[in-house]
Image (cartoon, rainbow, N blue to C red; front, side, top):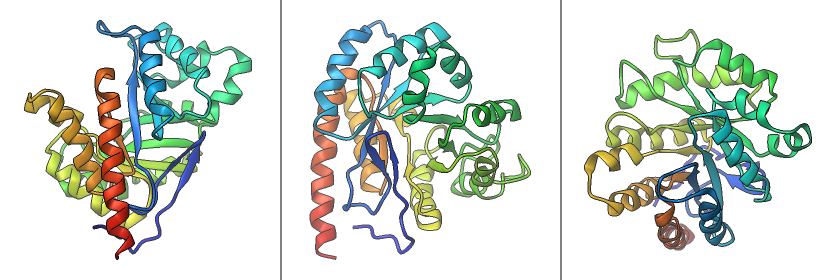
Length: 267
């Protein structure tokens, strides 16, 4: 099993801890919630509540308009302590849609997602103005999706920007940076980058393999494999897929967590 020599940072966002040594903490499951043809928001709220009481979870807000995002945030109000991930391109509109009395509570639970080397400075400035402290930094590199490209994006900007994503996030007020080394490109490179990033920086790190699983076109099994594989590689958080798979994914993650805890106890 894995044991990183680098001290592993833990961030508490809302009522959920992100980060730590594999086998010594539970893996956070991130559930995308938004308007879909299959389930309305009330149904998704019920399905989410079934898993959030048993397993550490966070919400990934999805939506194509500020109105849709506002509807999801309204749902999030009733889920006390659950972290809320909002894409950087939507975060300003999302906060504008919130009533003033709701902003203070939700702001302590918000994680700004989707920040990468191609994010315009205007978006970074919006994040700073909103005083967002937690962010998920995507190691996406438009010219190099290899292990090196992903790590260089975080470390020095990968010749796309004049500083690494980690330094840039600090400059714009982020005090709880997390890393996502998944997304576009080969899944294997993402898994290797996951190990390197946790060993190098010790920050909460995940590897979003949903696109890889979708391209494999093997159905729900691909989504479940993507989640548990990145978990087994040391991910501090994983991305679930369709609401109908949340309960099964949570059970699988819990099982893997227990096995890793047993293995680490013998190290």
